[in-house]
Length: 307
Image (cartoon, rainbow, N blue to C red):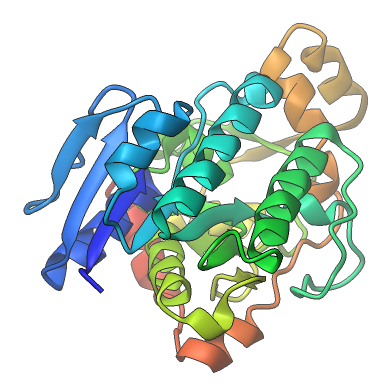
């Protein structure tokens, strides 16, 4: 092994993966369409269209691991952007022999009753969940057919931590909450919901990529005990020395009416089941395999408040 790593995506997960690998002295390159700098010392950066399979293959040549930390910016265009991107990742991993490590999510499971475990079927019915389930099935099939040296997907719940911004349901409303303003959150705000620190996503992704015995399946990121949305927001505010704020709920007819004028909310409305029932992640398998414990909740809140 050469300890070379190619990371696609410079968002919070990609940045944390780069920092982890660089800290141990690995040869790390982060590529994005713009060539964005993660700010991580000792890491190379390059501009690349990762949906170009030939270009991605050239960039991944000699890499031990190809990390998919991409997060296409327009949530409403996943059907257009994800298939060619995923196909390019598969082609590059197959041609170069790099292990393919995927940053996944919980969408493939669809609505669930009870805590989510990795042996649940990918049974989503909404189009984003169906899409992500199909992309993972394609990657797993390539591994089963021995076209990939290794593949693994790490799945996390809603992100907290630095740099999450509008991609997190708590961090999205945090700027207004820090000013003492009333905020509105999706669905019910009084149900238990798992939140995952982006740093813990990175730690689990690196561990899984480098453990051949873990390949060919999905793993859940170790996460703190579930909180309600209102509790999570209040805890982050407390970490910033701010009092709780009033929290409203966008659901039902009100959500339907607003979604009429907002493509993004139309997409989120399909996922409202995540906020209308308990949404709890079982992470016991990953904890047992790698001994990873989630970042303490107080630190997660401080990191989120300071981002």
